[in-house]
Image 1 (cartoon, rainbow, N blue to C red):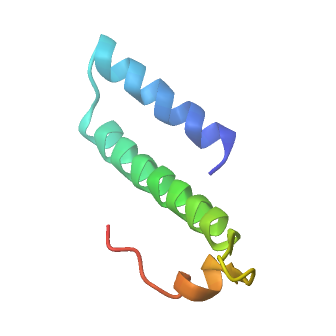
Image 2: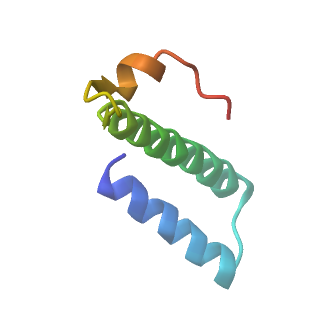
Length: 74
């Protein structure tokens, strides 16, 4: 997600509050928001896959290796 797209999301939000959006702008806003949410989910998944847990027995377990192959449900 580029800074330009984030700026456009904010611009459309502010315009919707002040004067309203056209049908095309509403579609653009929905597409940009969906792309933003997908980007946030990818980044969060990458962070979670990089977490290592130290078990009580002293072994280290990578959560990405243990749970990383699961699909996100939402």
